[in-house]
Image 1 (cartoon, one colour):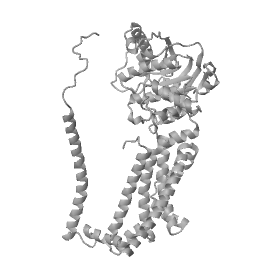
Image 2: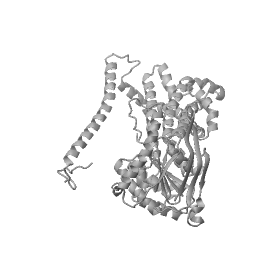
Image 3: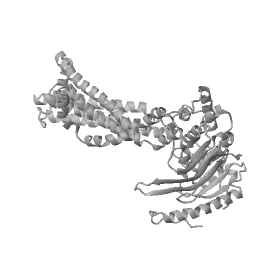
Image 4: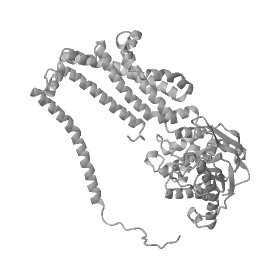
Length: 284
Length: 285
């Protein structure tokens, strides 16, 4: 995917501490410096508990208590004032099912427009567009409980896309789906982003998924999360299945795994309440 | 990691007709349903029959346990004879007014206060000690207090019913607002919904299942309180009818009263379930 040199959002020396239930300070993220360029897909991976989701929640505006700065470059967005007004700064696709069960598919998408004050025609056109994009054109009146898990996640993706966000935030969006659906959805996401020229911040724990979808992979260290490695990914435009045939895909996956494995091993060893008898991951 | 293809077919042929198997499964399911219904009818009938026989043959004292058929024929007088019918209707109207008004007042107040508690932390801090202090008290113990406030009569009874309903609805509404799936709140925040849109489209709908169960529990309370206060107040109503007919040993009328109370509870529960299905159709029960 083509990314420009202009920054979409710049994360500047960000540190996050939160209080645990028993009142101890927990250091989640430390001195994160990261630049997301307009039009690129950045995947964040790291051992569990490394603060990837905390970082995403900060960008999503769900968490507003942190040290450091998040600088949005909204002026970089193309288009005139009017089209800029019709966009959210960020929109999020969550890991768990985030469709609202009391609304139809169409209303679930429209709820994202609440702040944008779109005129009627624009709103209707956007709904039609995104439902087409995620393959749900035939189900605007369906309720989420009538859809499969994969389809519900498509609704959530459609809702986020419809707000034309400057930054599309995805928090392990495919983690709750079965392996086959996941592969299909990875391909669809890549195709969709290409069509919508989205800037994407993609949190995942799946290394292969990160390599598959991203232009750049950021590896966070074990808690407190720091930027351990930033790795560009050559995008070839091959399909997600073809990509797996590429030796470079395997090499990169292994390289990233080796980077993370050290962190995972470290965090397991440090975990005070690891299950007895659980196998420790070998440190590479 | 290579392997030979052991066997591969483009698409396996569809062999045979499955309609026989489907038909059999359908029959089994229908059979099970019939069995369930048959037992649901059989057990109560058997109990009634046992009772009928036991009082006919003198195993039960007829003065206290008249046979079901006698009760029915006695109760029918209350529908057939104009005097008795008017009397019954007055009792029904009295209890109905108390129950209806008390429930309505308590439910509306509970809904509003529950929402405020759920949405506004300071309200929650301010009220939680008071609510947690009063809630565990059996509401009937407050009846004398209500009489002091509102005097003997309808007002104090309605106030006590409203109070009982209020706590159930308020507590359930508040917990519906606070403990519904946190992802709904995340959606509201992530898409920057304006406050009122958020309340109308996310907070309230998410709390509906919990509000419904609050209404159900509240109605149970209301029914207990209306009957019990009528026992004590001696001022008419179905509760009075039950208590009075027991005192003058007009036992069939007591059973008539019991049946009315039971049917009311059952009917209200069905209505509330129906309301839940209409307002929260996504909830599988």
